[in-house]
Length: 188
Image (cartoon, rainbow, N blue to C red; front, side):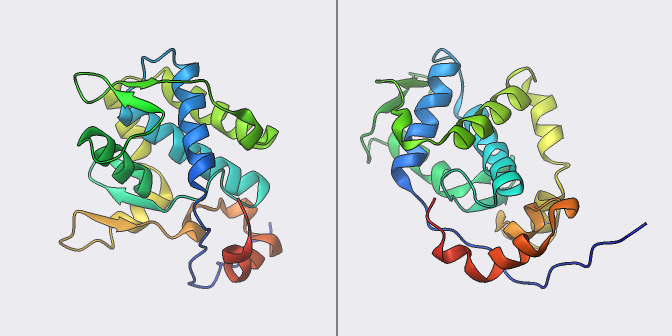
């Protein structure tokens, strides 16, 4: 039985692609027939980013992930949602009167999303959509990368997730080690 040596402590960072993020949100909202809440969208995006990183060596759109009280979240997307709800930012999706349900004002432009991006989004959708809130919260709170970051937060309400912790042990190959050094140069 072979063991995989742990990766050195370094962060893997990607540059956020805001257009791909928007299209990913719209794609999920339209798949959910405008019935999905911000919590579910954030969890779906978290699982999609993590899936794509593990299977294809890059995330779908490169958000920073954070461990928060409600579990792992793509943090800049979470911040975007707060700004949209507050009316500070206008975009191609809106929140319902409850400030939870997301409605798309147009279909996603899938020209911005690769076939593997859509595969990862489908993975996130399927992983989360059949669970109720307590089940989804419990599942996401068991994720290794979430636990690593949450336990480092101290008295803070959140802590960034180091993407090296989001890489499955079986996928910690030379390619993953390469990402630690060169992810900042990868275009998502």
